[in-house]
Length: 89
Length: 252
Image (cartoon, rainbow over all chains, first blue to last red; front, top):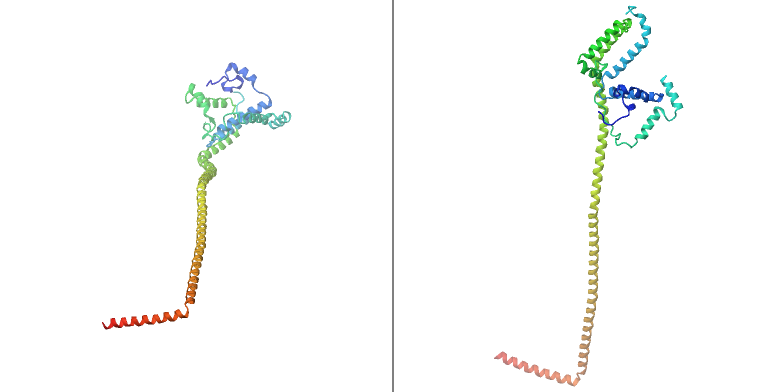
C-alpha cells in the first residue's frame, strides 16, 4: 500500500491519520473553485462506481433517492416535530 | 445558489474554474504521459455492490472484523429503535403513505427488475453488435484492400517478363525483315547476273551463226561454174560406181 511518499494534503480522507487531520484540513482547497472541483470529483467517483457500468443495478439510483429522502426529512424535522405522539422522551 | 456561484466564478476568474481546471488537465496530459486514451478501456461489468438496494457493501466489510456478519444488522436495528423511541422519526400520515409507496415500488422492482434489465442489456447488445459490424466491415474492407495492393505489387513484378516478351517479339520481327530483304537482294542480283549470262550466250550464238553464214556464203561464192560441173560429173560417176557395187552385193 505504501508505494511512494505522498504529501499529506493530497491523501484521501480515509487514508489521513488522526494526527495529520489538522494539516490536512489546512491544506485543502476551500476556494469556490476548489469546492466545485471537489464536488465534481465526488460526483464522478459515485457515477463511475455505481452507474457507468455495463450491468448496473437498482442500487445506484436507490441510494441517491434514499439520500434525498433522508435529507429532506432532516430539513423538514422542525415542522414534523409537531406531530410527535409524546412531548417528553 | 450553486449556479450563481458558477456564474460569478466564471466571470471573475476567467480561464480558471472547472473549465480552467479541465483545460489545464487537458494541456498537461496531451501526449505527455505514456498512457494513451485509445483504445478506451471497457466499462466494468458490474458496479459497486449494494445490499438490500440501498446499503453499500463497504459498510458490511468495514464492520465485519469487529462484529462479524450480524454487526451491521444489529447496528441498523439499534438505530431504528433509537430513532423511534426518541421520536426523531415521527410516525404520522406520511409514514403510512411511505409504507404503501415503498411496498409497491419494491414489489415492482422485484417482479419486473430482471426482465427490464434483460431488455436494457438486449438494447446495449444491439448497439454493440452494430458498432462491431461496422468495425468488422471496415477491417475486412481494409484487409481486402491490402490483398489487392499486394496483388498489384506482384503484377508489377510480372511486368518485367512482359517487356522481355515484347522485346523478343520486336527482335524477331526485325530479324525476319532483315532476312526477307537479304533474300530479295540475292534474288535481284541473281536475276541480273543471269541476264548478263544470257546476253553473253546470245552474243556468242549470234557471232557463231553470223560467221557460219559468212563462211558458207563465201564458200558457195567461191565455187566457180567450172568447178561446179566437175564436181557434178564426179558425183555422178561415184553414184554409178556405188550402184554397181550394191548391185553386185545384192546378186551375191
